[in-house]
Length: 269
Ligand code: NAI
Image 1 (tube, rainbow, N blue to C red):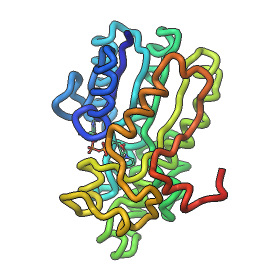
Image 2: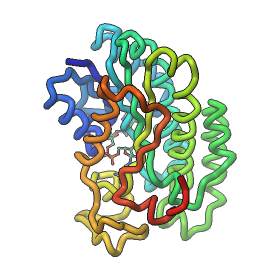
Image 3: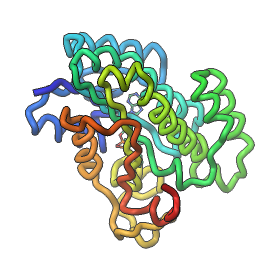
Image 4: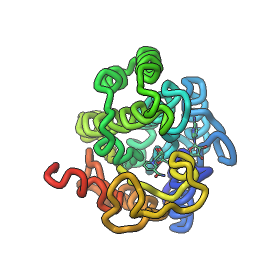
């Protein structure tokens, strides 16, 4: 049985990943702002350092897998916080935990992106560039300035929609660039991403202003399967990527979105 760290473990997709791995008999170290084995704010550098320290202490220094799930949605008012939590949090954590994954001999990392990266037409190229350059201060500053320049109707709908989609776009690109570097690939640490579509969690319901399940056919993006995802639908694929047997896939982005991305970009591969 393996030892896995899961961020965002207190709710939604992260909680489903914890349940899935625990049911298979693995040891799971949950990380979240509350109700977790490791309490840490992944939106700050101090919080990330604490998370790494506590995860390593809890795991004895070796990890079989990390699922970086924690994130906030586009309805969060501060675009800078969205960048820090959704992009810089997972990147810093995975970079710091990579040696612990290497020690397992079959380390696996999965990040949760979003199909917003390819379906929301508000990607901020400069913000993506600053994120990939690792400049958190500049990215935060730019995200706030760009947010202030957004039309009122966009801000009223989802104040951080551009930062949200851009944070997930940058994260997917970081995964593809990083997974193939010798430091990861030649040391047997595989790194993949899942891009969920609309999944029924507090984040999704809060972002769309719903308290109960909305009608899939009224949703703003196409929903070919006619249903929303459940956290378990994402947790299933997270678990597949984390298995030691999943040994020939790295740098992949898997859409688990009921067909939304395929419907919107049928000819993109
Ligand atoms: P959720 O709100 O149910 O769970 C997110 C968890 O992350 C919460 O437990 C929260 O406390 C934790 N978290 C937030 N900020 C944190 C911080 N600074 N430090 C540590 N933990 C923090 O949301 P959900 O839907 O389960 O989201 C999980 C991931 O899936 C997020 O990255 C989200 O962007 C992504 N996603 C969700 C979709 C959806 O429709 N639900 C669609 C596409 C992507």
